[in-house]
Structure formats: structure tokens, C-alpha cells
Length: 82
Image 1 (spheres, rainbow, N blue to C red):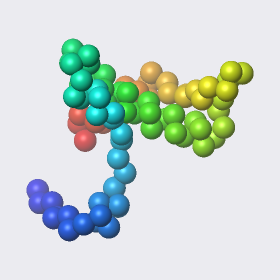
Image 2: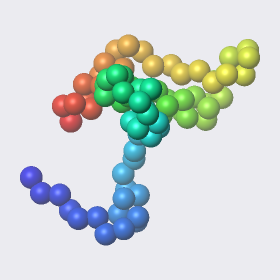
Image 3: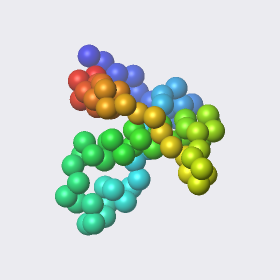
């Protein structure tokens, strides 16, 4: 399998990314948390931005996500199997 070389930001812009806070990777406080849990946190942050766009807020004005266990399992499995 061959992959193209990326020359700059315009090449990288064609991809979407999940964001995982650096603190989860670099802080001693989170050293015992599994990589899977950190990935799940990133997936849930992605869902949170979708919830905000859709205006999904509770009575205390907190955004909430809808992410079924089945969807989590499918997304996590795809993350490891490609």
C-alpha cells in the first residue's frame, strides 16, 4: 500500500480529524486511562459539536449528545479495524 506525501495545509484540509485534548496524553493525572477511553472522549467531543449545531440543550442550557452504545461500539471497532 502506498500513501501520497503531504506538501502543506491545503493537502491536509481534505481530511477530517477527531480532537483529543493534549492533557489526556501528557498529564500524569490521566496516565492510567486507556487509549480506547481517550479515543472515546474524542468521539464524544465530536458529537458534542454536532449537538451544539443542532441546538440540543437541556433545561440548564447544557449541550447533550445522542450516541447509542451500538454506535459507540461500531465507531470504536472501525477505529481499530479501518
